[in-house]
Image (cartoon, rainbow, N blue to C red):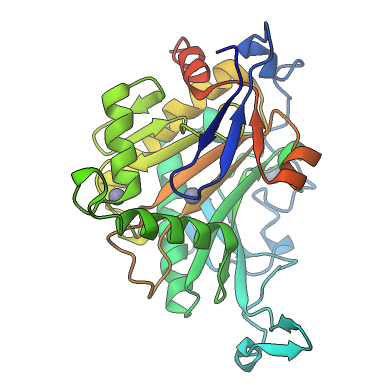
Amino acid sequence: MSQPELRQDPITGIWVIVSEGRGDRPDKFARPNGHVTLPNHDPKCYFCPGNEHLTPPEVEAYRDSNNSSVWWTRTVPNKFPALSLEARADQNLLIKDGMFIRTGGYGNHEVIIEDPLHNRDIPERPSDLIREMWWMLRDRLTYNHSKGLENVVVFKNKGEEAGASAEHPHSQLAASFTHLQQLSKEIEGSQRYFSLDNFMDKKRQCVYCDMVHQELEKGVRIIAENPYFIAFLPFASRVPFETWLVPRNHKSDYTLITSEEATSLADVTKKVFQKLRGVLKDFDYNMVLHSTPLNTGVQESYHYHIEIIPRTTKIAGFELGAGTYINTISPERAALHLNSYR
Ligand SMILES: [Zn+2]
Ligand SMILES: [Zn+2]
Ligand SMILES: [Zn+2]
């Protein structure tokens, strides 16, 4: 693709410019120094086994038995929470300050320690342990919903470029009673799409289901699939090698994932990260899980999914000022390149 092209995300309405530099090779996105070598245990790390006393008291852990000190996945409250369950409930009221509105920071902020090994991120981790991470996230979403926190987003920052403050593999969960911007934007967009009932003679349909259908039909952006999930690079990818994991069958609420589906999700996650690792080497990334908020009545129009956003380029003035992303490799070309790694 030599001419620049504008592409619109059918969910959020966000426009992306796909503009491939002349002669750019897909492997220019790889980190030049290859793998960063970390020890498998760091005595100074708060998240390494043996240092459990350095984190706030754990809220959930998977271990051999209740008394065992051996765990493989562990959740603790964030030591420096962005939102807190301790903020008083009556602080939920919106307070007007002239033209401005504010409210108390009632919510929750948890850290999920994904692995006992300091240096074992998703690409190196066995599938059954990746499954435990996904299962723990199901537990934590369920718990936070039970606290009346309707909006929950799980995110992972891996590496400095992605904003990580700790090396040890971990994810974070933020739960809020107010809207979380990106989640709200997706929900509004998918409702808009759903209500276009006579559009092109089609019946009411979920935008994600339609996308899964079209991606399977065209096949040019798919990088992994199995009985329950497909992984593809979205049509309007914001950054090079952006990848989404989407359940094939419609499901809005991630907490309803079955045991079999979680195993399948771990399998597709592993396949995707192995391909990304093949091309991008030791890349930094963000990963996000979006699931339906409680009490929104969007079970038919919204579809849970996971977004992987490799951080091989910087977000710069154009993105901030224009709100439009410039992606320098088309998702079709990126997918072709990833699929050459098996
Ligand atoms: Zn560690
Ligand atoms: Zn759907
Ligand atoms: Zn999303």
